[in-house]
Length: 347
Image (cartoon, rainbow, N blue to C red):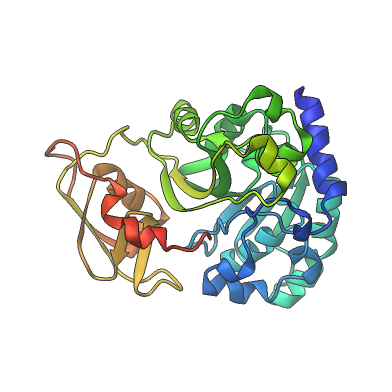
């Protein structure tokens, strides 16, 4: 399938075929009850017409966003963009980019409704009709964004190398990529990658996990972290017959625009969470195996240390140590957190 045909099929699927989340044929979509409680409360103030046309597979809305500029790739009808509008506050900014006119029409129709609902003098959300592979054409400058989010959209792109290169271009140094998407346990056969229904259902373009690691390394990101994950059930017999041999997982991933090492190295560094991030008084999870209890010191590898010290999270941690002395590889495996992370919410 050519890039243009692929784009046309995605537009048709999300603009015409899908009219609400009940039309989806897989269990990838993240239900509201699976969201963290603070986000569920904010969801009450999102217009029903927007909530009905939500097709995401997670809640890629990281904490500590007050005053930030956040870019939502594939914003659709704007559910996450309007949640972000609340999280960044009246002085923050949200940019939503999407290529489906029908979805953007819904999002734009309710801009003033949300500004009034939130008590803002004007909407702090801007919706752009454009392509996530070419953010420069959307007017998004180099190093102009604090956080990039995306919810089950990056898999739809046939130019993933370009997408991740653009993300790293627009992020400020120390900026964060935080996204949810569908991943595959193997490469999808070429014939199935051309199937329009499998494409629209976020299966045909699902990224093979090892290829994602390689892709991010080429984009300049040597260390990405899984925050949460859950299997994606195939609910349709026809889809199962086509692609049931592939294991699909919905993951929420965190990555930073930082100069990190490709292995976890031990420098004897320690991080202690202060408990100061809004709505996270007791603990902060950097990923599925770094659980920071408030006030409890935790040994961390050099990359984890930098992910805290050189980002907006630094103000919320007491950070001790440097890279002056090296002690070899750091055991940074998630094995010790298996039980805790397995029970985690999909969102």
